[in-house]
Image 1 (tube, rainbow, N blue to C red):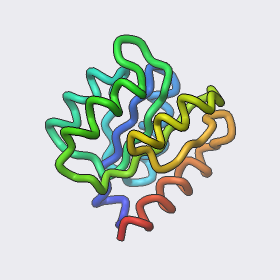
Image 2 (image 1 turned 135 degrees about the vertical axis):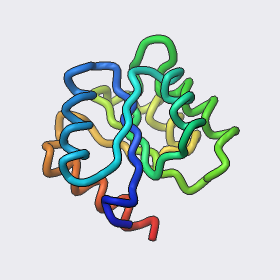
Image 3 (image 1 turned 90 degrees about the vertical axis):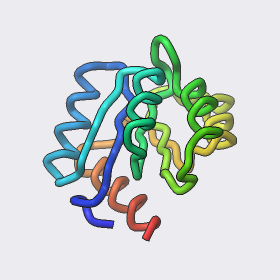
Length: 128
């Protein structure tokens, strides 16, 4: 799946990180939308289903687990890739995210801009 065809949703409450991820992935050619919590993200997914979701776990209003609980039962496209992207290494929450449909977990601190693009490319290549 090429960058021009791929729609990515960033769900991140930190404004600086949110903007950084949007800039990195947009510059790489991806169509990127972003939300600052799970409630806003649910509205965006209802408008257009993404190919890939980067999901923070700790957010106000509705956290990542809450988003997954609401999103997965209503999604029409079970092939949406979900990557939990967090600075928290909390095994219980990570396991729950996997149980709710996440396919991968990445620590934010380990993901340079180049690594972020590689993760997206690898994940989307697996969807073809």
